Length: 228
Image 1 (tube, rainbow, N blue to C red):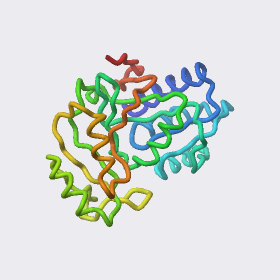
Image 2: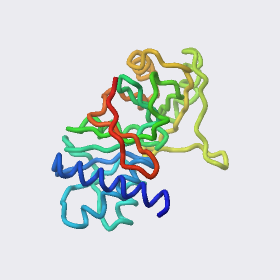
Image 3: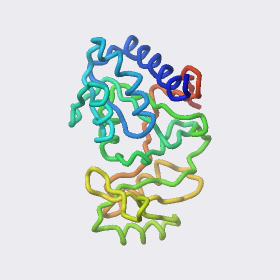
């Protein structure tokens, strides 16, 4: 059995457990590798009739749903029973860094709508304090202003580019900027400062702690992690 197949089985077991415990009518999915892997583990259960409407945070996840013979809503309802997402880092206090999947704004909406939030990460992403670059979704018109303001705040900012040098655009037509602040000792304070910058649409610091956190260890069942 390949590593990918064993990971899908592990996430399928987790998906079954979450469905049985919470019986969600709606399931929201973030973007990126963890959300895609979870959806592939979840899909056989939904095809077997464990009915739940899917809410996709990106075209990436909507396409995966289509590949699995499922459909996904393109708009978030006011409440989503269960949201499953990944993260770039999770601190001991439950603060998240997100943004590598490039769907910050839509993931923020899903987190706000979630009745229960489940986060899946590799063990290396569990840290005492956040220290990776912060991703920001930025309006193209404000690019130079935001980069200058980030430098003024002491960050080392850079524009996220594709392999051939074109800027990476979000599904909302915005740019993605990476801002390296080093060790982030006050995630809430930094979030507020960045959110106030003109032209910043969204910030990759998510302050809502997950209701359930799982470490994805290759070849093993997902391990539940307690915060703190």
